[in-house]
Length: 181
Image 1 (cartoon, rainbow, N blue to C red):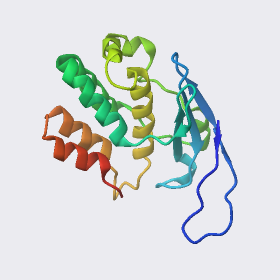
Image 2: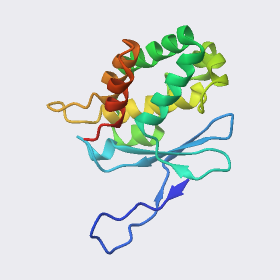
Image 3: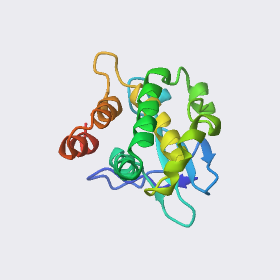
Image 4: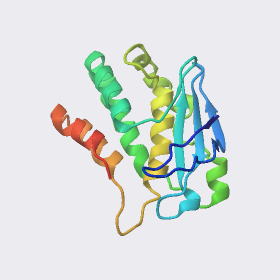
């Protein structure tokens, strides 16, 4: 998978294409591309995530995408969706940041295997995304989030998932999902 990065405001030069260092192919034909990033506490450990659903354009995932999908799933199967959200929140404590550039390039996904996600598959009937896509995406986002400086750690995912599990009002959830910086 590859994409053309956008040039920064005011820049005249076209940036070189980025090519994935790893791709994860899902059973429904969706491909998640992992690209070398250059930000964070240790830039060599940073990643960018893009995905492409079968027959669609490459997209950049945002928190609001999976949040809305989980809210839709919750309207149809509250109990199982809350269990899935709890699983994702607990995953935050188990997933570690990349420890090296080589570790980033291997990009081993341990928490969202088909076996571990099987019990949540009934949720695939609702919303836009399958649970394997959401799980893989969130596991990768956690790895990204944990590559922030220890003195200023990012907690967007954790705080967002806590708000969803506490069933905060929609305004609180959407505000956290769309915050920048």
